[in-house]
Picture 1 (cartoon, rainbow, N blue to C red):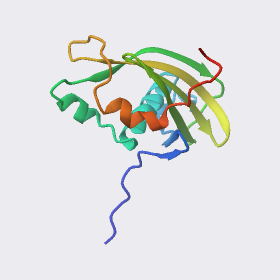
Picture 2 (picture 1 turned 180 degrees about the vertical axis):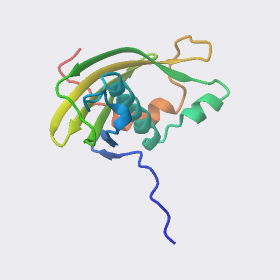
Picture 3 (picture 1 turned 45 degrees about the horizontal axis):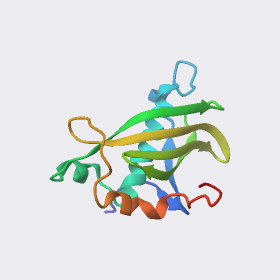
Length: 155
């Protein structure tokens, strides 16, 4: 007897993480269009699964001697098209750079090649009492291969 496939955490294509997401009835309003707040959930799944596939575990971060977590401190979203029930979407996520406790992340949601929504996200690494902190040892190193190359035109 064959086993059912495990849920996918997505794949890397270059430095982009691609996560497939299906729109279910529960994601929509009474017209069959995705309710705007659900895009936040799709974006969160993209960021979390990016870390998972890059080898960073939220559970491991919490179980460290110096536990750490993330909070979103800013998110700019642009809604460009409506996603609808049964749509097959792809959440594309890139972790662009880290500065002190902050991580800068770019995301967009596609239906095929059509852009549905985009987000620029700033997240902060925090201690368990909510204070900002630099990401713990190993985290930045795990993400470095995925960061955008430095812009040579910037000082």
